[in-house]
Length: 425
Image 1: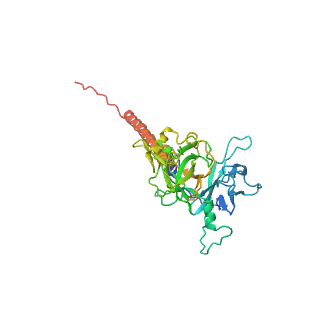
Image 2: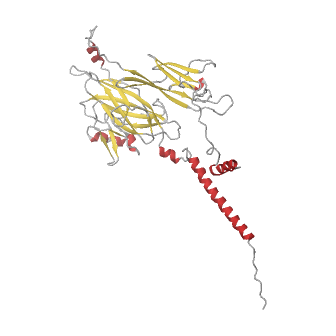
Image 3: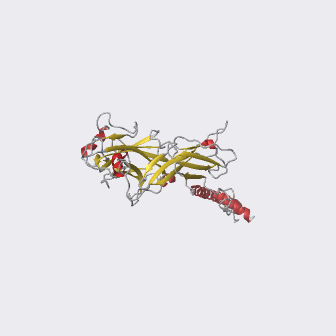
Protein backbone atom coordinates (compact mmCIF):
# COMPACT_ATOMS: atom_id res chain seq x y z
CA UNK A 1 0.00 0.00 0.00
CA UNK A 2 2.84 2.37 0.91
CA UNK A 3 4.68 1.69 -2.40
CA UNK A 4 1.54 2.15 -4.50
CA UNK A 5 0.71 5.36 -2.67
CA UNK A 6 4.27 6.67 -3.24
CA UNK A 7 4.11 5.90 -6.99
CA UNK A 8 0.70 7.59 -7.18
CA UNK A 9 2.11 10.73 -5.54
CA UNK A 10 5.09 10.77 -7.96
CA UNK A 11 2.79 10.35 -10.94
CA UNK A 12 0.51 13.12 -9.65
CA UNK A 13 3.30 15.63 -8.94
CA UNK A 14 5.85 14.90 -11.66
CA UNK A 15 3.72 13.53 -14.47
CA UNK A 16 5.30 10.05 -14.49
CA UNK A 17 7.36 7.50 -12.60
CA UNK A 18 10.64 8.09 -14.45
CA UNK A 19 11.95 10.54 -11.85
CA UNK A 20 10.94 8.30 -8.92
CA UNK A 21 12.61 5.06 -10.07
CA UNK A 22 16.38 4.52 -10.41
CA UNK A 23 17.64 4.73 -14.01
CA UNK A 24 19.86 2.00 -15.36
CA UNK A 25 23.11 3.10 -17.01
CA UNK A 26 23.56 1.62 -20.48
CA UNK A 27 26.49 -0.70 -20.92
CA UNK A 28 29.20 1.05 -22.94
CA UNK A 29 30.39 -2.31 -24.23
CA UNK A 30 27.08 -3.16 -25.83
CA UNK A 31 27.80 -5.24 -28.93
CA UNK A 32 25.37 -3.24 -31.10
CA UNK A 33 27.38 -0.03 -30.79
CA UNK A 34 29.79 0.66 -33.68
CA UNK A 35 33.42 -0.12 -32.85
CA UNK A 36 34.91 1.89 -35.73
CA UNK A 37 34.26 5.41 -37.07
CA UNK A 38 31.30 5.62 -39.46
CA UNK A 39 33.37 7.61 -41.99
CA UNK A 40 37.04 6.87 -42.74
CA UNK A 41 39.09 9.11 -45.07
CA UNK A 42 42.35 8.10 -46.76
CA UNK A 43 44.37 10.91 -48.34
CA UNK A 44 46.51 9.25 -51.01
CA UNK A 45 49.03 10.83 -53.33
CA UNK A 46 46.62 11.64 -56.14
CA UNK A 47 43.21 10.49 -54.93
CA UNK A 48 40.82 10.55 -52.02
CA UNK A 49 39.30 7.34 -50.64
CA UNK A 50 36.24 7.62 -48.39
CA UNK A 51 34.77 4.57 -46.67
CA UNK A 52 31.29 5.00 -45.19
CA UNK A 53 29.60 2.52 -42.89
CA UNK A 54 26.05 1.68 -43.92
CA UNK A 55 25.21 1.99 -40.23
CA UNK A 56 26.11 5.67 -40.57
CA UNK A 57 24.08 6.95 -37.63
CA UNK A 58 24.79 3.98 -35.34
CA UNK A 59 21.10 3.22 -34.92
CA UNK A 60 20.99 -0.03 -36.87
CA UNK A 61 19.05 1.64 -39.71
CA UNK A 62 21.28 1.09 -42.74
CA UNK A 63 21.62 3.85 -45.31
CA UNK A 64 21.33 3.12 -49.01
CA UNK A 65 24.40 3.65 -51.24
CA UNK A 66 22.18 5.51 -53.72
CA UNK A 67 21.53 8.18 -51.04
CA UNK A 68 25.26 8.94 -50.63
CA UNK A 69 27.21 11.35 -52.86
CA UNK A 70 30.58 13.10 -52.63
CA UNK A 71 31.36 16.74 -53.36
CA UNK A 72 29.45 19.55 -55.07
CA UNK A 73 29.27 17.51 -58.29
CA UNK A 74 27.45 14.65 -56.48
CA UNK A 75 29.92 11.90 -57.40
CA UNK A 76 28.47 8.44 -56.87
CA UNK A 77 30.14 5.64 -54.87
CA UNK A 78 31.71 2.51 -56.30
CA UNK A 79 29.43 -0.40 -57.07
CA UNK A 80 28.92 -2.66 -54.07
CA UNK A 81 26.94 -5.76 -53.22
CA UNK A 82 24.22 -5.88 -50.62
CA UNK A 83 26.29 -8.10 -48.32
CA UNK A 84 28.96 -5.44 -47.82
CA UNK A 85 28.74 -3.29 -44.72
CA UNK A 86 30.45 -0.22 -46.21
CA UNK A 87 30.20 2.12 -49.18
CA UNK A 88 33.43 3.34 -50.86
CA UNK A 89 34.33 6.42 -52.87
CA UNK A 90 37.58 6.71 -54.85
CA UNK A 91 38.01 10.06 -56.59
CA UNK A 92 40.90 12.22 -57.75
CA UNK A 93 41.92 15.14 -55.59
CA UNK A 94 40.78 17.57 -58.29
CA UNK A 95 37.55 15.74 -59.10
CA UNK A 96 33.96 16.09 -57.87
CA UNK A 97 34.32 19.85 -57.38
CA UNK A 98 36.87 19.54 -54.58
CA UNK A 99 38.25 22.94 -53.53
CA UNK A 100 41.93 23.58 -52.83
CA UNK A 101 43.39 26.12 -50.44
CA UNK A 102 47.06 27.09 -50.16
CA UNK A 103 48.41 27.87 -46.69
CA UNK A 104 51.91 28.62 -45.44
CA UNK A 105 52.75 24.98 -44.85
CA UNK A 106 50.11 22.86 -46.60
CA UNK A 107 47.83 22.28 -49.57
CA UNK A 108 44.31 21.70 -48.25
CA UNK A 109 41.72 19.85 -50.36
CA UNK A 110 38.17 20.20 -49.05
CA UNK A 111 34.91 18.47 -49.97
CA UNK A 112 31.94 16.93 -48.19
CA UNK A 113 30.00 13.67 -47.95
CA UNK A 114 26.26 14.14 -48.42
CA UNK A 115 23.56 11.76 -47.23
CA UNK A 116 20.28 12.79 -48.87
CA UNK A 117 17.65 10.12 -48.17
CA UNK A 118 14.74 9.64 -50.53
CA UNK A 119 11.52 7.67 -49.99
CA UNK A 120 11.54 4.08 -51.23
CA UNK A 121 8.84 2.92 -53.60
CA UNK A 122 5.40 4.34 -52.88
CA UNK A 123 6.25 5.32 -49.30
CA UNK A 124 6.35 8.98 -48.32
CA UNK A 125 8.29 8.65 -45.07
CA UNK A 126 11.98 8.68 -44.17
CA UNK A 127 13.66 6.92 -41.27
CA UNK A 128 17.10 8.55 -41.53
CA UNK A 129 18.19 12.18 -41.53
CA UNK A 130 19.91 14.30 -44.14
CA UNK A 131 23.53 14.83 -43.17
CA UNK A 132 26.58 16.63 -44.55
CA UNK A 133 30.04 15.56 -43.34
CA UNK A 134 32.97 17.93 -44.11
CA UNK A 135 36.08 16.15 -45.44
CA UNK A 136 39.57 17.61 -45.63
CA UNK A 137 42.98 16.37 -46.79
CA UNK A 138 46.13 18.31 -45.88
CA UNK A 139 49.38 17.83 -47.80
CA UNK A 140 52.56 19.46 -46.45
CA UNK A 141 54.34 21.89 -48.75
CA UNK A 142 58.03 21.00 -49.06
CA UNK A 143 60.67 23.58 -49.96
CA UNK A 144 64.11 23.05 -51.41
CA UNK A 145 66.34 22.97 -48.33
CA UNK A 146 69.34 21.22 -49.86
CA UNK A 147 72.68 22.84 -49.05
CA UNK A 148 74.15 21.71 -52.36
CA UNK A 149 74.25 23.97 -55.37
CA UNK A 150 71.53 23.50 -57.96
CA UNK A 151 73.15 22.53 -61.25
CA UNK A 152 71.63 24.28 -64.26
CA UNK A 153 70.28 22.26 -67.16
CA UNK A 154 69.44 24.57 -70.06
CA UNK A 155 68.60 27.62 -67.94
CA UNK A 156 69.60 28.25 -64.31
CA UNK A 157 66.88 27.37 -61.80
CA UNK A 158 66.60 30.90 -60.37
CA UNK A 159 66.26 32.38 -63.83
CA UNK A 160 63.50 29.90 -64.65
CA UNK A 161 61.56 30.84 -61.54
CA UNK A 162 61.90 34.53 -62.29
CA UNK A 163 60.57 34.04 -65.78
CA UNK A 164 57.50 32.14 -64.53
CA UNK A 165 56.87 34.57 -61.64
CA UNK A 166 54.23 32.37 -60.03
CA UNK A 167 52.29 33.69 -57.05
CA UNK A 168 50.73 31.63 -54.26
CA UNK A 169 47.46 33.07 -52.95
CA UNK A 170 45.76 31.98 -49.73
CA UNK A 171 42.58 32.77 -47.80
CA UNK A 172 42.56 31.53 -44.22
CA UNK A 173 40.25 31.56 -41.22
CA UNK A 174 42.22 33.03 -38.30
CA UNK A 175 41.95 33.13 -34.53
CA UNK A 176 40.71 36.32 -32.89
CA UNK A 177 44.25 37.61 -32.23
CA UNK A 178 45.27 36.97 -35.88
CA UNK A 179 48.25 35.02 -34.55
CA UNK A 180 47.39 31.59 -35.94
CA UNK A 181 44.95 29.77 -38.17
CA UNK A 182 41.65 28.88 -36.50
CA UNK A 183 41.59 25.24 -35.45
CA UNK A 184 37.84 24.73 -35.64
CA UNK A 185 35.50 26.20 -38.27
CA UNK A 186 32.56 26.30 -35.84
CA UNK A 187 30.87 29.52 -34.70
CA UNK A 188 27.96 30.69 -32.62
CA UNK A 189 25.54 32.99 -34.41
CA UNK A 190 26.69 36.52 -33.65
CA UNK A 191 30.39 35.58 -33.53
CA UNK A 192 32.91 37.28 -35.79
CA UNK A 193 34.91 35.41 -38.43
CA UNK A 194 38.49 36.67 -38.93
CA UNK A 195 39.68 36.17 -42.52
CA UNK A 196 43.20 36.77 -43.80
CA UNK A 197 44.00 37.00 -47.51
CA UNK A 198 47.65 36.76 -48.48
CA UNK A 199 49.96 36.33 -51.46
CA UNK A 200 53.42 34.81 -51.26
CA UNK A 201 55.54 36.75 -53.71
CA UNK A 202 58.79 34.77 -53.51
CA UNK A 203 61.33 36.52 -55.73
CA UNK A 204 58.64 38.70 -57.30
CA UNK A 205 58.69 42.47 -57.09
CA UNK A 206 56.85 43.87 -54.02
CA UNK A 207 53.08 43.56 -54.44
CA UNK A 208 49.94 44.83 -52.70
CA UNK A 209 46.99 42.45 -52.28
CA UNK A 210 43.33 43.42 -52.66
CA UNK A 211 40.06 41.55 -52.10
CA UNK A 212 38.08 42.51 -55.18
CA UNK A 213 34.80 40.85 -54.16
CA UNK A 214 33.47 38.05 -51.92
CA UNK A 215 30.24 36.08 -51.80
CA UNK A 216 28.79 33.62 -49.26
CA UNK A 217 26.84 30.55 -50.40
CA UNK A 218 25.51 27.34 -48.88
CA UNK A 219 27.81 25.20 -51.08
CA UNK A 220 31.30 25.70 -52.54
CA UNK A 221 29.65 26.74 -55.82
CA UNK A 222 29.90 30.54 -55.92
CA UNK A 223 27.05 30.65 -58.45
CA UNK A 224 24.66 28.87 -56.08
CA UNK A 225 21.48 30.46 -54.79
CA UNK A 226 20.82 31.88 -52.27
CA UNK A 227 23.96 33.98 -51.93
CA UNK A 228 25.04 36.97 -49.86
CA UNK A 229 27.54 39.55 -51.15
CA UNK A 230 30.21 40.51 -48.59
CA UNK A 231 32.68 42.53 -50.70
CA UNK A 232 31.70 44.18 -53.99
CA UNK A 233 32.54 47.05 -56.35
CA UNK A 234 36.28 46.31 -56.41
CA UNK A 235 36.93 46.36 -52.67
CA UNK A 236 33.85 47.85 -50.91
CA UNK A 237 32.98 45.73 -47.85
CA UNK A 238 29.23 46.14 -48.33
CA UNK A 239 28.34 43.67 -45.55
CA UNK A 240 29.18 46.49 -43.11
CA UNK A 241 26.25 48.54 -44.42
CA UNK A 242 23.76 46.31 -42.58
CA UNK A 243 23.57 45.66 -38.83
CA UNK A 244 26.98 43.96 -38.98
CA UNK A 245 30.36 45.34 -37.87
CA UNK A 246 32.23 43.75 -40.79
CA UNK A 247 35.29 45.77 -41.81
CA UNK A 248 38.83 45.63 -43.17
CA UNK A 249 41.58 45.78 -40.54
CA UNK A 250 43.77 48.86 -40.73
CA UNK A 251 46.66 49.24 -40.98
CA UNK A 252 47.80 46.21 -42.91
CA UNK A 253 50.41 43.94 -41.33
CA UNK A 254 52.15 43.79 -44.74
CA UNK A 255 51.33 45.09 -48.24
CA UNK A 256 50.82 41.51 -49.45
CA UNK A 257 48.38 40.73 -46.59
CA UNK A 258 44.83 42.01 -46.06
CA UNK A 259 42.70 41.12 -43.04
CA UNK A 260 38.96 41.63 -42.56
CA UNK A 261 36.15 40.52 -40.25
CA UNK A 262 32.66 39.25 -41.07
CA UNK A 263 29.80 38.88 -38.58
CA UNK A 264 28.48 35.31 -38.81
CA UNK A 265 25.02 34.81 -40.25
CA UNK A 266 22.79 32.14 -41.72
CA UNK A 267 20.37 32.05 -44.62
CA UNK A 268 16.73 32.36 -43.61
CA UNK A 269 14.30 29.55 -44.44
CA UNK A 270 17.13 27.06 -44.99
CA UNK A 271 17.93 24.32 -42.44
CA UNK A 272 21.62 24.02 -43.40
CA UNK A 273 24.10 25.45 -40.90
CA UNK A 274 27.17 25.69 -43.13
CA UNK A 275 28.34 28.49 -45.41
CA UNK A 276 31.22 28.87 -47.85
CA UNK A 277 32.92 32.18 -48.62
CA UNK A 278 34.50 32.65 -52.06
CA UNK A 279 36.73 35.69 -52.63
CA UNK A 280 38.37 37.08 -55.76
CA UNK A 281 41.93 38.18 -54.90
CA UNK A 282 44.25 40.29 -57.02
CA UNK A 283 47.55 42.15 -56.71
CA UNK A 284 49.10 45.38 -57.94
CA UNK A 285 52.65 46.74 -57.60
CA UNK A 286 53.21 47.90 -54.03
CA UNK A 287 54.28 51.37 -55.16
CA UNK A 288 51.05 51.99 -57.10
CA UNK A 289 48.64 54.37 -55.39
CA UNK A 290 45.27 52.67 -54.65
CA UNK A 291 42.39 53.79 -56.86
CA UNK A 292 38.72 52.97 -57.47
CA UNK A 293 39.58 49.62 -59.07
CA UNK A 294 42.12 48.61 -56.42
CA UNK A 295 41.06 49.53 -52.92
CA UNK A 296 39.94 48.23 -49.51
CA UNK A 297 37.07 50.35 -48.12
CA UNK A 298 35.06 49.89 -44.92
CA UNK A 299 31.84 51.63 -43.89
CA UNK A 300 32.04 53.41 -40.51
CA UNK A 301 28.56 53.82 -39.05
CA UNK A 302 29.55 56.46 -36.48
CA UNK A 303 30.45 58.91 -39.25
CA UNK A 304 28.23 57.36 -41.94
CA UNK A 305 31.17 57.37 -44.36
CA UNK A 306 33.48 55.00 -46.22
CA UNK A 307 37.18 54.95 -45.31
CA UNK A 308 40.05 53.18 -47.14
CA UNK A 309 42.76 51.08 -45.52
CA UNK A 310 45.24 53.18 -47.47
CA UNK A 311 45.15 55.80 -50.22
CA UNK A 312 43.04 58.95 -50.60
CA UNK A 313 39.55 58.92 -49.09
CA UNK A 314 38.00 59.86 -52.44
CA UNK A 315 38.55 56.37 -53.85
CA UNK A 316 35.74 55.08 -51.59
CA UNK A 317 33.12 57.59 -52.77
CA UNK A 318 32.04 55.24 -55.55
CA UNK A 319 30.93 52.67 -52.93
CA UNK A 320 27.87 54.86 -52.30
CA UNK A 321 27.17 55.25 -56.01
CA UNK A 322 27.13 51.51 -56.67
CA UNK A 323 29.58 51.79 -59.58
CA UNK A 324 33.36 51.94 -59.36
CA UNK A 325 35.82 52.33 -62.19
CA UNK A 326 35.12 52.63 -65.88
CA UNK A 327 31.67 51.68 -67.26
CA UNK A 328 31.44 47.97 -67.84
CA UNK A 329 34.39 47.22 -65.58
CA UNK A 330 32.63 47.10 -62.21
CA UNK A 331 32.35 43.36 -61.75
CA UNK A 332 29.90 42.01 -59.20
CA UNK A 333 29.83 38.55 -57.72
CA UNK A 334 26.28 38.12 -58.90
CA UNK A 335 27.87 37.75 -62.36
CA UNK A 336 31.29 36.24 -61.55
CA UNK A 337 33.96 35.55 -64.11
CA UNK A 338 36.64 32.94 -64.24
CA UNK A 339 40.08 33.66 -62.77
CA UNK A 340 42.31 35.29 -65.31
CA UNK A 341 45.93 36.29 -65.64
CA UNK A 342 46.93 39.62 -67.10
CA UNK A 343 50.34 40.25 -68.57
CA UNK A 344 51.34 43.87 -68.07
CA UNK A 345 53.71 45.69 -70.36
CA UNK A 346 57.28 44.56 -69.87
CA UNK A 347 60.41 46.60 -70.16
CA UNK A 348 64.05 46.00 -69.48
CA UNK A 349 63.85 47.96 -66.22
CA UNK A 350 60.94 46.01 -64.69
CA UNK A 351 58.71 43.06 -65.52
CA UNK A 352 55.45 42.45 -63.70
CA UNK A 353 52.72 39.82 -63.86
CA UNK A 354 49.35 40.62 -62.25
CA UNK A 355 47.45 37.49 -61.24
CA UNK A 356 43.88 37.15 -60.07
CA UNK A 357 42.39 34.07 -58.45
CA UNK A 358 39.20 32.87 -56.72
CA UNK A 359 39.61 31.04 -53.40
CA UNK A 360 36.91 29.39 -51.31
CA UNK A 361 37.11 28.93 -47.55
CA UNK A 362 34.70 26.64 -45.73
CA UNK A 363 32.61 25.09 -44.59
CA UNK A 364 32.03 27.57 -41.76
CA UNK A 365 29.65 25.87 -39.35
CA UNK A 366 27.38 27.91 -37.08
CA UNK A 367 25.84 26.34 -33.99
CA UNK A 368 23.26 29.03 -33.06
CA UNK A 369 23.27 31.36 -30.05
CA UNK A 370 22.46 30.03 -26.61
CA UNK A 371 19.98 32.85 -26.14
CA UNK A 372 18.12 31.76 -29.25
CA UNK A 373 17.88 28.20 -27.99
CA UNK A 374 16.57 29.43 -24.63
CA UNK A 375 13.95 31.50 -26.34
CA UNK A 376 12.64 28.46 -28.15
CA UNK A 377 11.26 27.17 -24.85
CA UNK A 378 11.06 23.41 -25.16
CA UNK A 379 14.53 23.02 -26.61
CA UNK A 380 16.03 23.11 -23.10
CA UNK A 381 16.22 19.65 -21.47
CA UNK A 382 15.11 21.09 -18.08
CA UNK A 383 12.05 22.86 -19.41
CA UNK A 384 9.67 19.83 -19.38
CA UNK A 385 10.59 19.13 -15.74
CA UNK A 386 9.95 22.74 -14.72
CA UNK A 387 6.62 22.76 -16.54
CA UNK A 388 5.65 19.47 -14.83
CA UNK A 389 6.55 20.83 -11.38
CA UNK A 390 4.54 23.98 -12.04
CA UNK A 391 1.48 22.03 -13.14
CA UNK A 392 1.81 19.67 -10.18
CA UNK A 393 1.97 22.63 -7.78
CA UNK A 394 -1.17 24.17 -9.24
CA UNK A 395 -2.94 20.80 -9.10
CA UNK A 396 -1.90 20.25 -5.46
CA UNK A 397 -3.18 23.68 -4.42
CA UNK A 398 -6.47 23.02 -6.22
CA UNK A 399 -6.91 19.64 -4.49
CA UNK A 400 -6.05 21.16 -1.11
CA UNK A 401 -8.68 23.86 -1.61
CA UNK A 402 -11.32 21.28 -2.53
CA UNK A 403 -10.48 19.04 0.44
CA UNK A 404 -10.54 21.98 2.84
CA UNK A 405 -13.94 23.07 1.53
CA UNK A 406 -15.39 19.59 1.91
CA UNK A 407 -14.02 19.31 5.44
CA UNK A 408 -15.62 22.58 6.50
CA UNK A 409 -18.95 21.55 5.01
CA UNK A 410 -18.83 18.17 6.80
CA UNK A 411 -17.95 19.84 10.11
CA UNK A 412 -20.87 22.24 9.78
CA UNK A 413 -23.34 19.45 8.96
CA UNK A 414 -22.33 17.27 11.96
CA UNK A 415 -22.49 20.05 14.58
CA UNK A 416 -25.64 19.65 16.90
CA UNK A 417 -28.21 22.40 16.66
CA UNK A 418 -29.24 23.96 20.00
CA UNK A 419 -32.63 25.59 20.12
CA UNK A 420 -33.61 27.97 22.95
CA UNK A 421 -36.20 26.58 25.43
CA UNK A 422 -38.59 29.03 27.08
CA UNK A 423 -38.43 29.12 30.87
CA UNK A 424 -41.74 28.83 32.65
CA UNK A 425 -42.56 31.57 34.98
